[in-house]
Image (cartoon, rainbow, N blue to C red; front, side, top):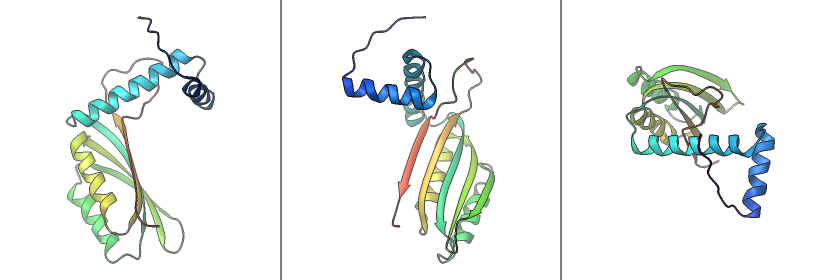
Length: 154
């Protein structure tokens, strides 16, 4: 174990404390370690998208948009090797939300997620990537690797 000293301003210190309290961290070292681990994994995902991952693709769409449900179904059938399962929720008369679990190479998962989010009629989209590490550090939290949020028209 190595000791690292950092200097942060008062505002960042207060923000870190709020983060710790919200997430239930007992000390700053644990919080900073998890934040650094997440940042390193995010950078690795952005640079080397060949690593295997799982992702949750969450999006809200207008089910009345011309042919959109058919296009979305076709997209997932065309990528049946990536799409593992989908949860469909009716939000109101016009809007539905879906959560799709994707599994595969990071770049392939990202390509499909970006394509779905860009479909005409998809109003909000967010994808959360998680690594498929063979080594899991005991006590380490499940960290977000890459999060990309999109919002178009309301």
